[in-house]
Length: 453
Image 1 (cartoon, helix red, strand yellow):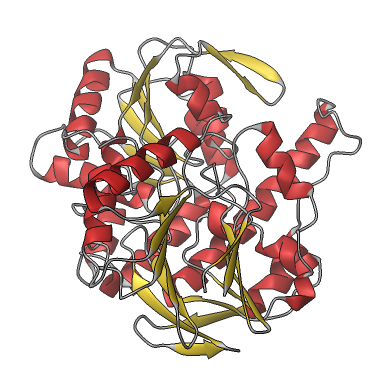
Image 2 (tube, rainbow, N blue to C red):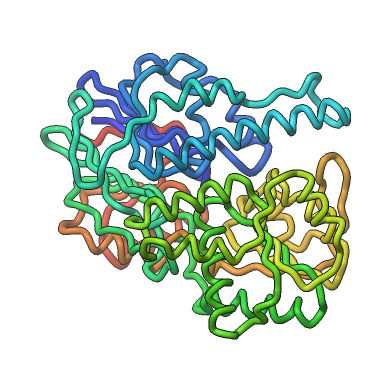
């Protein structure tokens, strides 16, 4: 058996791991590269394999850096099944259609305004490409092993977002366990990540491998920010991932209102059509999170849902506060949040709360590092409002939690491969695992192929 590390190696995004075994080839995840221009340009390159030779894709979860390149795979000839959990199937449909729509709209906007360096500007893939991909998605259940050629596949809950899973891949003699993205042990909505099964090799994420998250609860960070904009009569703008992060924010804001810790009358606007669709799935698949049937519907009844572009524009025209706006995307790479930043970013009464990981090269990462202006739609926007960042909202396990998860398995693996992390984070975690667990741990290079016989 052999693994090729074709993405998320030395960087966080673009997860793609090709597993070969006696004529069987599967791709674990097929994600989009995000962040710096050099990484984004990789999305336009051909895959380093013949797509027709891939027997199947095994998808861990629905975030774009894990599923976002599936339409490209299909566009270039792949016709096999794409396996995933039931919630992941529905989330992937929503996310890919939204991704294609945003790319088409951005290309159209760039062509109309003439600020693209390419003539004409083109989307990476279209809605039509996504529609050809969706019929290939096949739902599987947790703890129900199935066969792909000479390989046996088994899914385990990873606690990261709704439906997220770790994946065990085995032949007759060796087992590889892919962590996918691992969630927190104290997430407000998601269950704890399930312990890894017996495995010879572990391919583990390392996003926060060089640090632990703040001990301050995300609920307390929200409370402080909301009380501050209440006093300034400003706007609290929260760029948010539409899957997972947004639902946690809505839940915790509602809980703060119920407990009387923030004023009940402060309006909360949720401006993400995709996020609204995702929130319905939280009600449908309540067995995959901590709340019971009907509870998430009660939360959504308290929220002002912004559905149309006209409503979004009207929200920008109303400068009064206090109010809270939650909008995608979480790293400010696109979506309606950009128009909100243009509307509210220059006013010192307002605040932007960065409540998620900000990949280097994104607008969110620029703000995180103190940028006083950012480029949006070809123009520079002044940032005079307060910018607050907190990793308390993270849906990724931190360094201590990653080691806790690795230790929770029934055996010591022969080797651990660290992926899905920047070089520094992955290497720091490698040192910590070597020191604390005495495990052979390596950080693979992009494109490296390693035999695990």
